[in-house]
Structure formats: structure tokens, C-alpha cells
Image 1: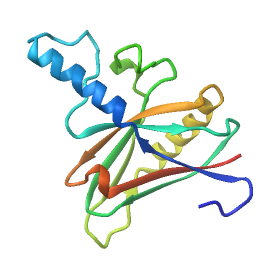
Image 2 (image 1 turned 90 degrees about the vertical axis):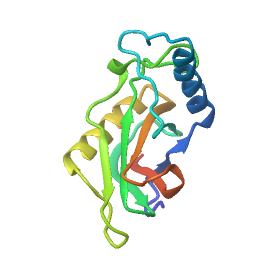
Image 3 (image 1 turned 180 degrees about the vertical axis):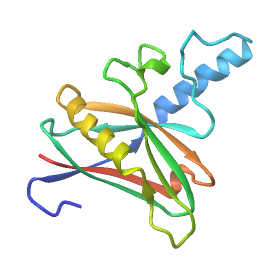
Image 4 (image 1 turned 120 degrees about the vertical axis):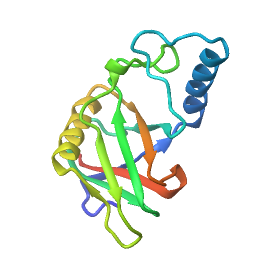
Length: 158
């Protein structure tokens, strides 16, 4: 929702193709009884790959908008600008800190988060947007939350 002419909102969209590709990698290793590369990040069943497409690149972070339809938790972890998911495996050192953690305790509660971590993560997105047109994220769904029950976006001043 853009309330001012210079305010833009980017929605996280699930990258089903990339999620599927990363799950195939994990399954392949399991079937071959092979260990992943040292430091390789394999998707867990409750983790999905999402992306943000930056249509503008000079941004100032304003806010997060995360809506959970049911009680639970979603953790948004960014990946560094060096990850090329179509060519290389994701390494744990390419995951950005801090993650933004959003949770809802009951159906009536507002979504809560650690404001400092969310702010720092949002500001880091602005820096990465200067050099990236697309950024990938690992969204971890916990405590009863599933991808269909969550919408996430981030707002910037352009």
C-alpha cells in the first residue's frame, strides 16, 4: 500500500522453482547417502525460497508488513549478493545476519518482531538493492505457520 508518491512496497514472492531445485539437491544427497559440501545450506521441510524484485534501487527503509492468518512464527533470512542460485549451492556463510523474526501468539494478537533486528535487516536491504535487482530469502515457517497463511512485504522511500 503506497500512501505517498515516493513510498514503494515490495512483496515477497515464493520462488517455487528454486525451492523445488534445492529440495531435489537435499533428496539427491540423501538417496546417495552423501554428505553436503562443507558449509552447504540444505533446505529443511519448513523452509522455502522467496525473492524480492527491486524495481527501484535507491531506497530508504521504512517498514515491514507481515501478516499471519494463524498463530505462529516466520523467520526471514536474506542471502548475500554473491549467491547465484541457478549455478551454485547455497553456503551458510552467504546467509545474512540478523534475520527478521515475526510471530503471532493467538488469533487476536498483532504480529510482533524484534524491532532492532528488523530495522537493521531493512537497512541492509537498501544497501543490497543498490547493486541487485533481485534478492533471495529463506523463509522459515514455525509453530503452525505455513506459506499460505503469511503475506510479507517491505516498504521503502524511493
